[in-house]
Image: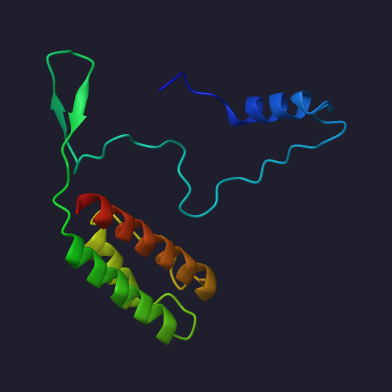
Length: 137
């Protein structure tokens, strides 16, 4: 990991590197945080824990006990629910997500979700799981 970089500084640099001038050729608009967006990303959550090593500044994350069959079944259930709901994020889907990711919290009540986009993400997740299974076998 390097030192943190401010997004505004990065945007200004990219605009200048493109041969343009920030604020003149391209405006930078601050829109605020979107629902679920984070100010920072934790490398390890408390649930994952970290194991100390002989070096005082190096820690190793504990691997999760991931059951591939259980995960595949849960993802298939979510896929069925997405295909068979009226386009709203149902309580059943949230419950399954909470089973898969215990730290999952749904912050927005009654939010609309684009079913097609969600289905694409689920299919992409299934492909990742299949790739992981191939590497394990």
